[in-house]
Amino acid sequence: MVMTQRIAVLGATGSIGDSTLAILAAHPQNYEVYALSGYQRLDKLLALCQQFTPKRVAVPTSAVDEFAQRLRSVGLNTDVVGGQSGLIELAKDSQVDTVVAAIVGAAGLPSTLAAARAGKRILLANKEALVMAGQVMIKAVKTHHATLLPLDSEHNAIFQCLPAAIQQDNTQIHDQSYGVRKLWLTASGGPFLRKSFTQMQQAGVAEAVKHPNWSMGQKISVDSATMMNKGLELIEACHLFDLNESKIKVVIHPQSIIHSMVEYNDGSFLAQLGSPDMKTPIAHALSYPKRIDSGSQPLDLFALSALEFIEPDLQKFACLGLARQAMQAGTQATTVLNAANEIAVAAFLAEQVRLTDIAAINEQVLNEVQVPLLDANSDIDDILAIDSLARSYTETLIAKMV
Ligand code: NAD
Ligand code: MG
Image (cartoon, rainbow, N blue to C red; front, side, top):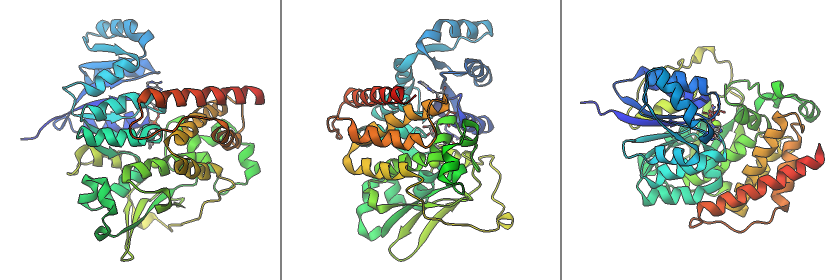
């Protein structure tokens, strides 16, 4: 008998939400869409409610009443909850088996943490949750016997290339008998890989969000252009795989065919390959340890001409160095960096600062803001206080620039 997994897709109206729901729609016998959330584009959320008939849905607090009315008018009696408390309620709902954490940015942290504390199976796209609260998240996962499966394509690739014992308990990576020497995170290099710093400086929004291989949300697309995305992923990998940043290398691989690698002490490099389509890692995590058809195009090996590997230019992509610096300093610093970056990216998208200003802003905030230390026992409110302090510091800094 097939057991139906009940799923809550938080961030259902986004790019990861789209890919996830496409897979869920193709396998109705395996998965029930129990809850959805959306923040903007509520027309799209309404259409998703009509298609998937979830039992519960979360929207911004200010939209609860109107959205409930719209649902009734199309004959649905879905339960509507609002705001962060609504998202938390869905994440820990006793009917939910699996939470797809696909909200973008710090806004995804409270519900992702709530899912961990409720012992859920978490499919993690929201990398910012680990960047801000890695130790607290991992501790919650262990204490409450939650399962954390990475959706980020690089981390999913590494997960697939690790032995089962390490997949089940990340601290086993330190058992020398498994021979893990290093992790290799691949990066596409984004749209400015082969452009000069000056060209990058002059780039407008449309050019910056036009990723050569992946189709993604706006924020992560800008992060890919500055390589802050790889910096956030480096921090994410340190927490997911319990490794020091010095054990994690970044290599630019412009074709985005190898999604990341594990280097072993016998000289083996294990890699996961596939078309650049998030449906593959999402399907892997949904069905793990089994496999289902993801609907992605199979990789056409004969159509590939070459696979290149390039060392990142840390001057052009200074955000990558900042991520290492922050990771060495501790979780308070990675929280500051993440907050500064979210504000700087929003200012770039609003055409207030240049693309290359993002790294300079991040660096200045990281070096100047004074915050208390965080550790695995920190309270989420302490983390959110550092996040908001760094946000307002960054906003003030940007206000002086424009
Ligand atoms: P997106 O912008 O397309 O979607 C974001 C979702 O979050 C939407 O449903 C939106 O309504 C919701 N949201 C935004 N602000 C919110 C708030 N304040 N409160 C509640 N909900 C809010 O983003 P995306 O590209 O799907 O990325 C989602 C997450 O997945 C990010 O953390 C990103 O780094 C990560 N990720 C994305 C990709 C990708 O290919 N898109 C790949 C790897 C990891
Ligand atoms: Mg990624």
